[in-house]
Length: 419
Image (cartoon, rainbow, N blue to C red; front, top):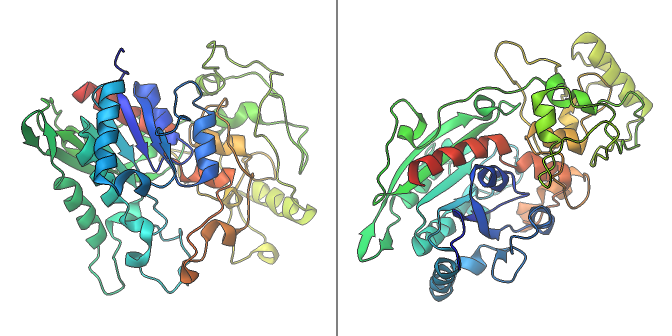
């Protein structure tokens, strides 16, 4: 059986933004782990034909992979037999416990008590078992300063994460080797993503692999130099603007032809390489059913450059208008789990799921499973009651994802280093 090109194990995969970028770089996912059923459904429905839906190739709970040393050993042996050497283990353990907005600040619970905050150890255990050529850990900026308890030391969680991955050793033949590691805080906008989205990236490359690390690159050369090229919102989303839109309705066909390079790329079918033309079907372009009062508020914001009328200000939302052009400093927004944070640059409404996905550089052929949106409490769960379950609607799946373009840039760089 021929070896699989650059086998990838994708942990905490979410809806698949990290994986899609890595796939475009040349990796092939062979095992995927994602706890939430909707996100897993999104991941699998966009990767038919890879065998990921077969038993043993997808896992909801990572503990089903890592709690038994014997099963981990058997998995490593099977993957080597079926696919050859694993090229990369990648993943971003759930970040809600590290983020300032992921869990409500009013919950009387420490980060040490949140089970998902310890899952990086499971990722390290899997790396130790399968001995990939490289690994990639990603997370939110808040991880760098997070404390286990209110009285703890600033950054102590990040120190523990780094120590855990630095301590990983693997067997390569008769040798026991470690990983050369490096990390950096990168901004997605520096890699062609239309967002100012900071991500912590920690990379490890097996020390038995010779690499030529360029000086001046992030993480001591383990991460790529910035590429730039983040498109303006008008160039990214302009072809989706439907002059006949109405609240609560759906635009089902492209209202205009692709005008820019990024629009053409996002409208390109992976099946035949064709760019969807004006009038071709488009999905996930449903509009929120805003009330007349909300539309009046958004229209005022568009007329005044984002000013919210005093009578319409609330503590819950401090919406901003997405500009047509970013200006000299580039993108100044971050796609969150809640599209209501932003107003479209030319119409009095919030972005659609399709527009939200484009801000994360997902192509238009990518589909999303589950509900379109849901309430805040259902998104957050209730840790104070031991309820760690969360709804994961489409907007949240997209907001939680690693931007595809960022992942592709990192993937191409890693393949250039370790093959």
